[in-house]
Image (tube, rainbow, N blue to C red; front, side, top):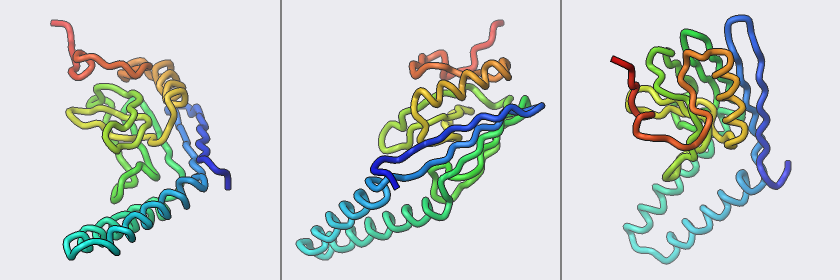
Length: 177
């Protein structure tokens, strides 16, 4: 196990689809150092706090444990399959209770990199309606651009943004009159 995490991206061209597989190997910092630090801070609050601090520390410890357990159960692999009809992602999507998502291409407004914002997970997101759904979480910007370019070349009808910049017009499907 290395100190930092490792993310491997594989692209397979099928006759009617593109398939992307992301394999993640967590490093010692993510799998050991962060949880140890988090539980140490919670222990300090527990030791010095009042009843309400104890309750909050207990809730934080339980939710942290649940998140770590679910992430471990879901594994480190995510598969994305893009066809001219749908976009389907399966595996560890960075969500507690969801391991698969299917989005019809007709609902897709854009496919692009997102840095995760406030506590979110960076990676490849599909915007459909007002929602941004992660389909390949934890990808770097360069890996995301590789995926987006492959989708753009194979399926030009799917709106895919190659950069991180977004404008107000990218929030809405603007069609000529």
